[in-house]
Length: 159
Image (cartoon, rainbow, N blue to C red):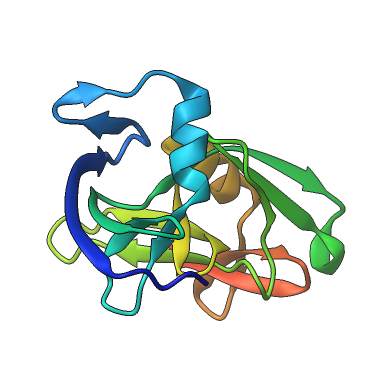
């Protein structure tokens, strides 16, 4: 909710694999990554920023700022709940407030799945977790998808 003046860019990048990099070197201290993640936001301009009460620094993000590395399932059918854990420890339950969405690469047809975390921030669902989702998928009107929190989330066309 802070709106400090934009102070420029900082050489921090979040790569597709969820790793954080500063000036070409990987940030390996998880507490530091968690601190940065706690002040991260994506604004209406589509850019990602680290925002403190006094400054706002733009960073680069390859796919999504977070990586969903684990999924837990409770219940079945319409009562099924899918909870995701990110590499920085955020937990989100897929549902109306935390939708799952899948982008399809127009050239390769490869799916790229995401789950909403907070604000405009999403987590890329890693491949093993996406395989878990695919195992839970059910066909509906020619589409495959999963239920969570009373919502059906489309994962792609039924083969």
